[in-house]
Every structure is written in structure tokens, then in C-alpha cells.
Amino acid sequence: MESTLKEMRGGESVLDLSPKATVGGGVEDVYGEDCATEEQLVTPWAYSVASGYSLLRDPHHNKGLAFTEKERDSHYLLGLLPPAVVTQQLQEKKLMDNLRKYQVPLQKYMAMMELQERNERLFYKLLIDNVEELLPIVYTPTVGEACQKYGSIFRRPQGLYISLKEKGKVLDVLKNWPERSIQVIVVTDGERILGLGDLGCQGMGIPVGKLSLYTALGGVRPSACLPVTIDVGTNNEQLLKDEFYIGLRQRRATGQEYADLLHEFMSAVKQNYGEKVLIQFEDFANHNAFTLLAKYGTTHLVFNDDIQGTASVVLAGVVAALKLIGGTLADHKFLFLGAGEAGTGIAELIALEMSKQTKIPVEETRKKIWLVDSKGLIVNSRRESLQHFKKPWAHDHEPVKDLLGAVKAIKPTVLIGSSGVGRTFTKEIIETLASFNEKPLIMALSNPTSQSECTAEEAYTWSQGRAIFASGSPFDPFEYNGKVFVPGQANNAYIFPGFGLGLVISGAIRVHDNMLLAASEALAKQVSDENYNKGLIYPPFSNIRKISANIAANVAAKAYELGVATHLPRPANLVKYAESCMYSPVYRSYR
Image (cartoon, rainbow, N blue to C red):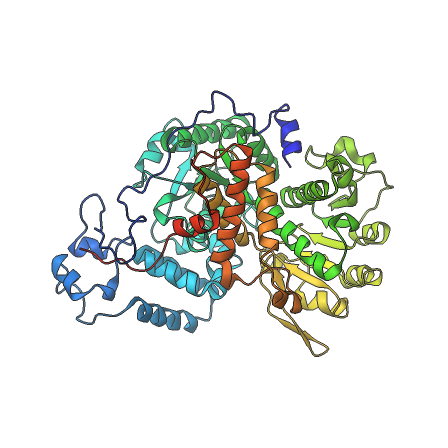
């Protein structure tokens, strides 16, 4: 991936730390809250000590009926709450009971967002303790529907909206955000939300959802997270005509106008928060995603989850699957449907890992990987008309028009879908794949569920129960010929929270491909024999905080090794250090 981006930036590497890219800013725990043990008393600071009615309206410090009688007395809450004092555990039980009564996922999403706005710690306690049940609600697939209807369900703003109207004033906009110590920013321009296309300003649901996972799964403090939407308009005619649309009512800005606003934003972030703030690009269209990553990779701590996070989680699944399908990475042949940012990103990381294992140049290992786009197999005869990020995947072969023809010609052992188009892995394609593979690995990665290239049921049935299957969105377990198959979910949420935590705890100032490989290796090692016996190539999400701590430690170790870590001296035990840095949603006692 870095080799492709280096070409785009004229040979400059992320490790070429230029003098203009000085280390500044940084993040500190202003009130010492994270350094205190859960038993120690802390003060609920806002701009002043929160008390009375304002304390009940402050989601960072509100505990609802869990305020003790002593706290009610000392913080002017007497009479503002019913007399009952309940535990956080009882609050959690009541809320889960209520959530399970909703039949519609979007209603559950709205209830969770309302809770986050009312009682932050209880929101995260719920999410951490019930992660497998609630992840599909606050993240894919439900967050996709929430973005489509964001204007209608909008209640109160979360995050910062930076539109073309704010051009020239972006730094002032950042200063309007109440938190001064920011560690992670997730930013979108809403042009390619999941597989749903251009949702403009309503794409804000994605940064909000991602950052809630940074906290719940990776332990980054909520106060250190900032969701941002860059609103340059939308080309979605339906939204432009929607009376409830919350964004700019104009066609999407492009070219220099777009580039100038993004550059002002990137410069303002660095000026306001320093060099160690992680900026995660999310759901940008292909033509902008690669350009932004190449342009800012050498001057900022930037990460694109669609290109790099997806690649890392898929590579982890492939490495783990080798235990079930046999052989080494270099023994297998890969065929992708989809050659956009996700497909090419995954392909490049697999080629890099293959190169690392075999000591063969990456230019050679790429030849084991083939990509199919909307015009057919990517081959040398098409090179002149290809976008720059597709060119490394143009190999010598006669033209092939469709995926079925490519499967027959290439005879892959691994079939990966990142096309954003549902039901493209047909019965004939999977049966053909299974005809020359004892255990074909099928990864249908497109989100949401409606866009998945095939369902778990189809993959298992059409391969006669022999496929190893993973998808981007969740599928229920499926029984075939008396055996229960549990589909794996190649969910970016396995990678990006731990990856981000690793960057934060090491004080990293750049992201390098070797860090992505380190994250993949750490995740693959977390798959147990018990998981393998169920056909799983990913560990259960119930262990996600332990998984994230291991990923963070591996990523941080690589940052120290590459010389881009600024948190010195290096902690002796990085796993324990990562765990000690994680945010806890347990209520604190107020003095």
C-alpha cells in the first residue's frame, strides 16, 4: 500500500520525517480522572463543578438514579430525583429489557443515541457488556439506515459540521468544540457511505458510530474523540429535494474548492490539537480517498479505515483460515470482485504479508492476486485506461468479461467480494469454486447486509458445507446436513479501535504498512481451537477488549521499532500498559 502511495507522492515515504512536520500539541488527562482508581473520589468538573439540575443534564457525569444519598445532598440534587437509589447494574438490566422490546433496529439505534446523550457511562457499559448484541445496532448494518434517515431522526447535534460556508474559519470552528484534548478524529465527507452511496451531511452517523466503538472496544476516552463531517454538498437528488435534509442544498464541490477546504481542515487540526491526533478518513469516494492518504500520510497521523482497516481485518482472517484450508499464504491464489479502495487495499496488504513471509519482492507476490472490476478481469491490455490504484494488479492474461469466467480461468482458492453489489456470488460461481477446492475460502465483505455478495446460507449450501465463510455484515448460524456453521464477520471493528489505541499510547506521529501487518498478526493469533472447530476465522466479539489490547501492544511495538513513537521511555509491558490506559464506564463516586 505504501509503495502505491509513495508513487503518488513522488517517492516520499511516511518514515521520511520532514523538518516542517514538527511534533507539537499532545493530549493530557486534565483532571487526573483516568489516573485515579475507580475507588478514588473525583470531582465532576465541567467548566465549573457540575451540580444540581446541570449535573443531571451533563451526559459525562450524570448517573441518574445511581447517585447516592450523600451525593444527592452534596451536589444539590435533593428533590430532583425520585427517592430510590439503584445500581448501575440494575440500570443496565432495565435498559436491555427495554431495548429488546423494540422490534425495529432503527428504534433500538435511536434509543441508544438518546442514552448516549443522557448518560455516557451507562451507554458504554451497555455496549461493552452486550457487544455482540448491540454492535449491529450502533454500527453496521443499522447505522446505514440511520444515515439514510438522519435528517428525520436528528435530535441534537453530535460532532462538528464543517461546510463550505465555514471556509476561512475552520480553526474557529474547531475551537468551538468544548473539549481541548483530542486524540482521535473520524472525518467523512459523506460521498460513499457504506454501500449506500452519497448521503452528504447525513453521513455523520458513521463518525459518531465509529468513535463510540473507539471507546467501547478500544478504550479511548469519549472526551478525546471528535466526529467531523465535511459538508461540500451532495449529488443525491432525493436528499436535495428532502425537506428534512440537514446539509448544504447544492451539488457536491470538487477540484480546487474541495481540496482547499480539506487542506484548511487538516492544517487547522494540526494547529489546534498537535501532531499526535489520529485523523481517520471514513467513507470518502475512491478518487479522494487515495489522494488524501497519499497527500497527508507524510505530514499527519492519518488512517483510512476503508483502505487500511478493511485490509488489515481481512488479512487477519486469511492468515487464521490457513489453519483450516492448509498451506502458506504464498500457496494460495486470490480473486477479488471489486477493485476500489477496499479491494486494492486488501490485495496490497496480502501481497505485503506474502512478501514478508517469503522474502520475495512485492511486485512478484502481487501476481498471485487477481482483481475483477465492472469491466472484467484487470489485465495488462487494459493498463492505459486503468485508474492509478488498479495498475499494479494488471497481469498478463487474455481479457475475461465477468466473474464466472475469471473463476474458471484463474481457479482461485480464495474468493473475496468488495464490490458493494449484492448477490454477485451466484450459485454457479460458488459451485465452480468448490469444484476445484476442497475447502474454498469465501469472504463476502460488502456492507450493509443487503449488499453482501452472498449470504452465509448460500455459501454453505452451494459448496455442500465445505466453504469457510466470512462476511462484512453479521449472519446468523446456519445448519447444513446436521452441522451448525457459525459465519465469521470480517468486521473492521476488530482492528481500528485497537489500532488507534496503539497509536495513541505510543504517541505515534505516522502510520506505516508494517503497523497494519502487526495488527493483522495480533488478531489472527486470538483465534482459538474452539473457534476453529466451529469454522470461525475470527474470535468472538465478547473478548474484544482483550483483543484490542493485544493489537494495540503489537502496533505500539512496531511504532517504537520504526522510530515514529514519541511516548518515551517505552513501557516494559505494552499489553498491560494498553489495558491500564483503557477507559472504564463504571460510575465514579463524587466528593
